[in-house]
Length: 429
Image 1 (cartoon, rainbow, N blue to C red):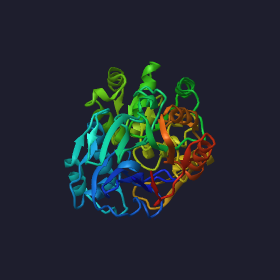
Image 2 (cartoon, helix red, strand yellow):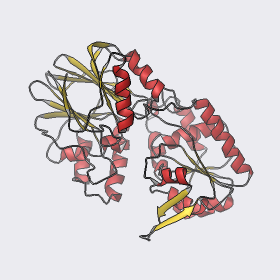
Image 3 (cartoon, one colour):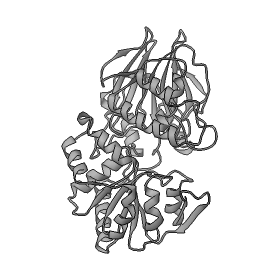
Image 4 (cartoon, one colour):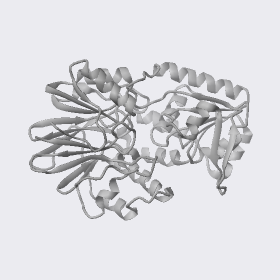
């Protein structure tokens, strides 16, 4: 009987890594990410002998960040798709370049990972070994994101990765009705305790608030993740036809240009091209000039204000009572973005200065929920549509302890065999 071992992402968001082992001890790795807190950033150590392949759900570093470490002494087949490989390369190069953490890999291992890539189209069944087959399904999370069906020893295990079953401007949603009958589900639980507000309502409120700031001669800074969230915001602004200068900065510029090479990864590539064309690319030398002119919208990483070009804008905009900072992504506890939201204080490390700078926010600060994760209602709806064999195993991962355990507990009331595993635990299917 196959065994599922959880090496990370269990009762936490970060270092997602799931190892599946067959009866004859062959293994496949699903995701291998890092987390950005504490000293132990890598997945749990385990015996990786007889590892036959690696498959990646999407490029975010909490799922991909530790992958190069698997390629120090091997050339394992790495199953992904073209856009995920390209964006993963960009993010991992950036992580290796700027990180002060001593990761056990470098650009050499990243290059081996790239050379080991084998592209797999959604819906195509791929043989890994006599015991293993995998199939990719659309996950609806970000461009290129997939869920993975693993067939092993006559059992079918479905790993959602990060999913979104609501339509966004950027990509189409995931549909669990497409999934064949399975024996076990491994599902994310990020927003298992929360429902997102209706997307149309969020977009309209977002646009109205921007209009108010611009009318008062202020600037709007939108700290956003460079991958997908910045482009989603661009599409929202374009949809409403705002006649306001829009600037894109930092990593979001590079990702946007890279996206233009993969037209089939988007719901409406023509709209994305138009939105990018209507946007100005900011550079470090003209950031302060943009703010001084006023009445501009600036979209810039990092989404949690931990670094990136957004910090340069924040140093001035936080003191401007007619301007606004609109956060559009989840703010992890302990990040500058979360502190800004909760306490109205911006704390950051100024370039060339080892001491933290603390400023009370005089600008308007607000959060708009443009999440690309399924919320509570969508998670339950997604799971309800899945066809199970008799076992009805559900493993709840990629959520904090309260989210993952609550989802498991509620599913158990509905006749599922649900578990919120802990890191290092193994389960026989």
